[in-house]
Image (cartoon, rainbow, N blue to C red):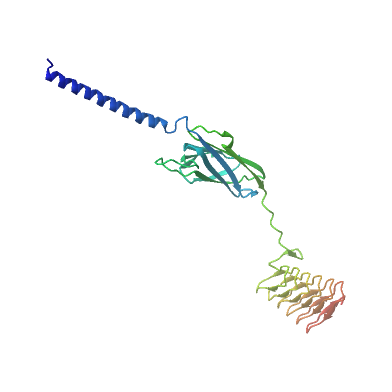
Amino acid sequence: MDDPSIRACDRRAIAGALMVAALSLTLGLTLFASASEGAPSDRADLSITKTDSPDPVTVGAALNYSIQVTNAGPDTATGVVVTDVLPKGVTFVSATPSTGSCAVAANKRRVTCALGTVGASGPVVSPAPVYATSASITIQVLAPKKAGSISNRASVKGVEKDPKSGNNSATAATRVVAAPKAAPTPTCRGQRATLIGTAAADNLIGTAGRDVVVGRRGSDRILTFGGRDLICAGRGDDVVRSGSRADGVFAGPGADRLRGNGGADSLKGARGRDRIFGGRGPDLLAGGAGRDRCFGGPGADIFRSC
């Protein structure tokens, strides 16, 4: 005859065994799920592109590298890291990622950016988390101080197996050029100009101080005042009136009109058919190679080749 107390013990034992089995199954499934995330069987086709700007770049000027990382899938890429080895001679300024963070080595040559997770560009099955399918990095440097060519290479890798490793690196070549030389300052009779015309017809007005005026191609109107000025007319048909002190006025190739003022001026024609007018002072009126006409003023003027 069965003992009821024994049957109760059996039922409790069976229930306990079933509970242990259920817990073991749950734990096993949890461990399996954890191991499956980023598992070696996952695949993520990471690719990287790299551009430079400007190219060519002037020696010592700012140079930007733009890096783009994308994931063609089929799985999400985790632990994505970009490594960029900077060319010799450049000076590191900054590295800015769209996600994650960047660090530069002590030698300022190697930049490492941990971008984290990059989602696959294909469809993502819900409820899996959706991540951005691309990431970008901007690295700014100063170009070398010597002209030449430099090359910068960046590479990307993730935890998952990459089925196409050939697109995991990119290189940008940049031409470094010397700074353009500044155009020399025009001169008038060997002295650096303080007022310079253009190719157009200009009104060039001097100051109360000493001016050195150089006309250019246009038919200019040039007026100076009281500072022992030096004036060289340009190629156009210029009209020049000097200041109140002893000025030097020189015609250009055009048919110029030169007029002295109150000082002892020197007014000299050139190849064009110039008209030269003396002022109140004792002026020197000298014709040039053209058929110039000279007109004395109130002062005791001297005429040469007019």
